[in-house]
Image 1 (cartoon, rainbow, N blue to C red):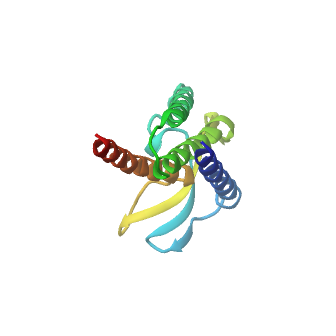
Image 2: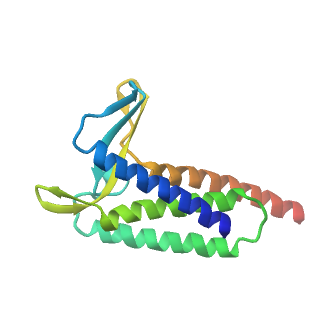
Length: 168
């Protein structure tokens, strides 16, 4: 549990710090090209889920908050019961918890004025280009933690299955 809490706290701190930086330094400015055509920093305010899904629906925020809280609770419950040795799964769980809490923080506390009034949303600011002039939608550190955490968790489950099969 200490590894999970440490990774989650570190990931959350980095996510919140970089979002605060993006809010202050990118919100009213042109994108910053770190590596032209590959990696840009550009402010985006996502009121929906991944890729802006359900961003225009009033009830979506409550659903996203509920799903996030339930997911974090499930991961922590699973962590408490995780019987197998190894560091990969606890690190992955910490990344999942840290990423989820980072985006939850924004959904609860971050607002921006729009033509429709004040809207809650998540700060995204990292833009990658996967092909010339074809960009991936903006994302943030929390999103990266969630993606990498899921990948590591899947690898950890495969390793755990092998470990259990070897023990008979």
